Every structure is written in structure tokens, then in C-alpha cells.
Image 1 (cartoon, helix red, strand yellow):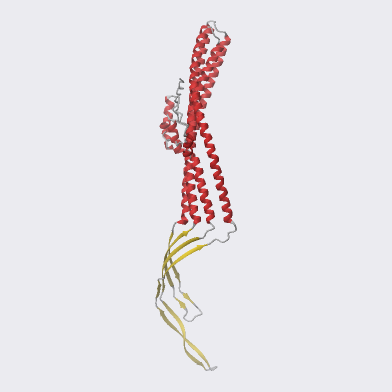
Image 2 (tube, rainbow, N blue to C red; image 1 turned 90 degrees about the horizontal axis):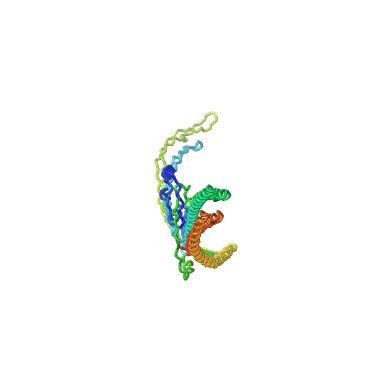
Length: 479
């Protein structure tokens, strides 16, 4: 049984972490909830706060928007338009026109129209909408695949931190053994039954084990930071995991695991939806050769009103002719005249409507349709080939993951036996060394084997959990 490493801490440090946790309460997860994370809890936090999961969800929203745009030409287009205008033309006077003045004019106009249009036959738009719908389904499958990848990455990093913590505990235990061996060697040296070389070797071994403890604790800090990054946290304050590891995990039946993987793998579903989208895209390209038919209805109502203000005009008119006796010519005599133009109003209310149909028949487009068809057909063949290759890769991945779990279970079982033998060997060599019937080299060799066996058991049990997580991912099981 591997002892858990001691929890390093101090009341003052714990209080400081608690204060920082309160100050950092806007991260979406309470820092108090991070102190004893399980693997499932870590996955849950990552699926909520991880940036890759967030980006995948936004891509789904983008695909939904693209589907709405693709369907837009197939839906009725209803428009309502309203216009309101007012104009003023001031009074106009003319110096060269007898009595020439135009009164000021005010004009008001109001109009409204309603138009409705509908595509009746548009195969290209119809296939474009189908392609967008299949693309949305592929994007949703890609989101599920991203979530599974993030879940696997979080589990791998979670158990990397568990491994670092347990190996740190193994290093602490090894340092404790070396300290005990040093004390035993010092006592034997003091009574003259151990040479000075044994004492120096024991001291060297003890110093090296202390260095190993420092390196192991540093590894714990690094793995904790990496886990915090996957969880979407800005730092690792207050983050800790439950480091207990089960001794075994169940092995699923291998009879139908491949069929289960084919049915559940989101990346395979994504490829299938991409093939559907490529087929719809090819249909859309081919539909560009066919006519399109549309209809429209429009109704318009307008009101125009014009007001011409009243105007008083002062002009000059010919009154009479006066004879000029000097040259016997007639001289015209003019006089002022005053006239009144009353206010005048004009109003009209025109109403109009129209109904139309539109037929578009493509004749020649410079081979652009032919080029698009060729591109889409090639894309479809590539997608089909990718699907066939992906099925082969999934079969290999599932088989390897299942065999990996079988191996991990066997390694864990053997590691338990090896640790039991190493513990017995260490106890025996320690007693023999204390009695003087064994050398320090034999004792230190037994200690190294014991430490290695403890590390191997940690690696085996962590590997067992990772193998199970890898198999879950290969089978397409949702986190």
C-alpha cells in the first residue's frame, strides 16, 4: 500500500489562500470547490470554462447563422416602405416682367408601399439550404468531438498531477528510509561495527533523497499549473485533487466495442455530415443549370398636397398716350396697378399596384457552373475517401486502447506483487545489516528497489486510469 504524501501547509498560508479565494470569486467556480477535485469534477469545470470548448460552441452558433442565411432566399420577402417629405419654394420676383411675381409654395407628400416576393422554383437555393443544414450537423458533431478531446486532456493532466503527488510521497518515504538508514549507520559507526565509508555513503544517499524530494515537489507545482490552464483558471491558487487511485477498473466486453465506436464517435459522425453537405453542394452546383421562377406583389399609396400662398402684386400698366407738340410724337403715360392672388390648394391621392412573375433561364455563364460542379464532385470524393480511412483508424485506435487497458490491468497486478516482495526484502536486509551480517550496499540496494517498486505501482495505477480514459475516448463515450 502506498502511503499518501503529507499535506504541506500552515495555518497562516491557509488563511491567505482563503482570502485570495474570496477576492477571486468572479471566475465562475468557487476556490473552495477546487480544494478536493475528482476527475469527473475537473472534467465538468473544463467543459464549462475551457477556451476550446467555448470556441467550439461559438462555431455552432456561426453555423446556425449560416443556415438562416442559406434559407433566406426560400422564404417570403416582405418589405414596407414609408416616405414623408415637405418642401418650400419662396416668392419669386422679376424685374423684367410687368407685374411679374410668383407666390411662395409649400408642398407636402406622404407615400407608403408594401411589396411581397417569393421564390417559387429555385433548386440552387434549396440545395444550398440543405448543404448549410448538413454543415450545421457536422459542426455540432465537431463540438462533441472537441468536448471529448478536452475531457481526455483534462483526465490525462489530472492523473499526471495525481502521479506527481504520489511520486512526491514516494520521494518523502525514500528520504525517510535514508534518514533511518543514516541514523542506523551512525549508531553502528559510533560503536565501531561500521566503517566510515558506510557512514559517508549513507550521508550521500540521504542528501540525494532530499534533492529528489525537492524535484518531486516542483513537479507537483508544474502539473498543478498545467491542470489549472486546462480548467480555464488564471492560476492554481487553492487547486488540489483527490489522489486516491482505484486498484482496478472493469474491462469492457470486446465483442461489440467496434460497432459501439462506429455508432458513437463524433468525428465519424462529423465526416458523415460533411459527406451529406458535399452531396448537397454538388446538387446546388448542378442546379445552377436550371431555370428559376419567382413572383412579386406590390401595392403603393401616395398623398400629395400643394399650397400656394396669397400674393399682392404691384405692377405698372399703360394708361394713355400724350402728344408731344415739339416733335409730334406720342409719349406713353404709365400708372401703378394693384392685384390680389388668393391662396390656392392642390391635392392628389394616387394608388397603384403591380403583380409580376420572373423567370430566369441560364444560357451561358462562361463555364463557371461546370467548374463549380467539378470542384464539388472532387470535394465529395475526398470526403468519402476520408470516411473510409477514418473507419480504419478508429478500428485500430479501439483495438489498441482495449489492449492497452488489458496490459495496464496486468501491470497493476504485477506491480502490487513486486511491491510486496520489495518490502519484505527491505525488512530482511535492514535486520541483517543491523546484526552485521549484511553490507550497507545490500541495504541501499533493497531501499532503491523498494522505492522503484513504489514508483512502479504509482505509474501502473495511473496508467490504468489513463488507459480506461483512452478507451472511453476511442469508444466515443461522452464525458
